[in-house]
Image 1 (cartoon, one colour):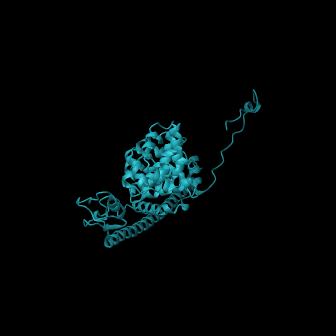
Image 2: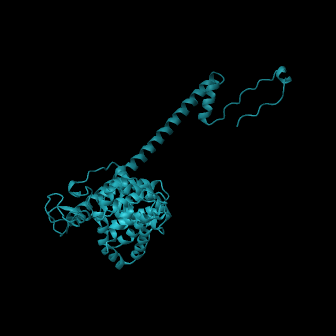
Image 3: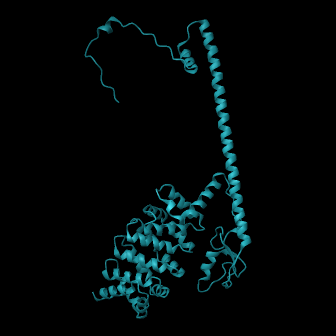
Length: 396
């Protein structure tokens, strides 16, 4: 009980108070709070400890590192598995959200601890759930400048529930977090872009209220248009970033003389020992925009778009001509058949009464009503009738 009260007091002291956050860390509280997490989601002390760590990690880089180094991430991930109805899981998701913000090392550690699948599971509680809101925010932070996490989050099935959260509209924090997570997932990742667009197709989502997704939708539409006309042109090798293996949008030259996507090489430069991905030499911090390469990439994309429009126009013209020719042929065949049947009808009248079948066919083709069948006079036996009158009702 004393540990529970102490953890609750620390949670309150750390909430929205940067000075207290530093003082709590300096007093050695973080390892003790991490130890309480290991009691599990059924423990009130573990729940409150997770809440305290959530507050301590907010906008405090030193605390984030201290919490990670104290071993907090694995027990926080374990708390997530209690589900969206658990306050311990909600606090754990919030703590991971704060720990992942602006901290590349912690983003990797959270993924390696297995956090992504249980975070994705929390999304399914819907936009009204605080746990889902925090889980979407955690995924947003985990996808920032981290290509490995982007792939892992897609593979964990996050895209459909993130798209579902968008239905709550731009006024919803959960929806806004989801939109930014999707924006990060799509960045320089054609596989993720395709998966996101596929999820949009079957969802009733107010996409026009999320400008973060405009670029991704446009890129996916552009790619689909090219593929529809068979322009699956391989990307030139020098247009591809050696880190992400995707097309570069903002290429820069690093100190090793090679060009990289800016966001990808900046992530490496933020590490403790930045080495060239290609030469393994130590990298300097200077990055020079490769304007010539960027212009070549843009010209290549514009040429592909122009070719796609031309091919699409030619295909549409060819289809229209084929349909017109088909209609002309069909009409000519009908007229020829009418003439043949008219000749046959004249010959039949010359020889005698029209054969019944030929008369019906000729009437249908010539637009005439078929001849009425001749009625037989009723026999006396059938006129007299016998047995019960009426008939059974037909099945509908």
